Length: 330
Image (tube, rainbow, N blue to C red; front, side):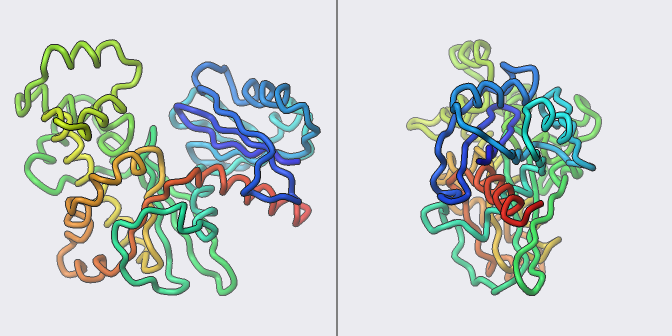
């Protein structure tokens, strides 16, 4: 038996798999609020007590780089170590992999029902593929064909320098530079970054915040879902709608950057928790206009398929990777 886990800054998803029944048929699943626990071992122990099944191995995708079996998580105060987890949990094998590598690992196995198409494009068989995922943070990854199968490669591109594409975004960069010093794409293109755009529009007087909505946000542990919901509902909150518009434009621009860097003629995939919630906004044309706004390479980008992953691809990838390790005796 294998436990696979998608470890996020906000929530942790765990599932139990039998190699005989495969990754589409988990025997048990559970969701945990990550910040309620001191470490991953506590969450897994709670899950094991619930399942009451014999488990031999685990594969966890984590937010942050994995170096020599160790990971210091980007948005959680946890330091994870494969050997330490193996001993603590009493398992034969524990594998850690970057969460975007796990998502990328799942991409070749996704079904039509797992995807929402933004741009049909033209698929280049065996062309490189790019994955970008705004969730609590901003993750990026890519896949390359080795002549037999796709190889998933992790990245920390979400922490690269934010590059404004218009005057408003330039002012946004200045505003955040004063607050944080270094302004990465994650500061403006993630669940933790979207409220920064909201604050910028409010604090610089570009948009007004109603007292009632300010009170709603003040009592919320996480402002992002409230802002997104207010932007999408009718009638939309104007400040929230403007926030989401800028967010989508920045996401599209960085997605285009990633597509150019890996020449993603095999397709671009948007993962993470935010894109599935804002598909209607991504379909409106704003995303593709910013995505292809690359000068002489606009036509090339216009031919690249762009899809939103609507399923739990990171968990699927962790399960696939873990079961492959078991089958290969690794």
